[in-house]
Length: 124
Image (cartoon, rainbow, N blue to C red; front, side, top):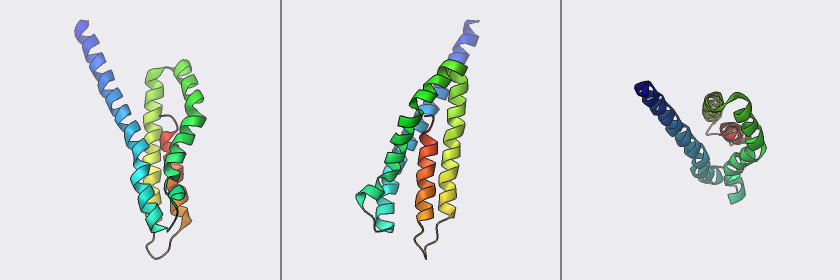
């Protein structure tokens, strides 16, 4: 029984490691892209840091609902849902790169990427 308990703890520790890695990746992903957006679209620093704002808006709007999910369905299911939503946000970020065309500066790419940041940060 103690061997099973140790294996269960190891799986939980590895899962939490990946969740925290995803949190730091998503939170810090917006800063370097903000510099690229600012230079690409000849925008201001405010527009460049819009991705960071989307992260923290998601934290603001989803903090309490995510806490309620923890209480209602538990840590394990909430963590799995958060990972799925995080990957959905990263996929949305990938879709924004497919919308990019070098011959025109489309605000669509900027909007989709900001939506991706918001989705990625929703349950994290």
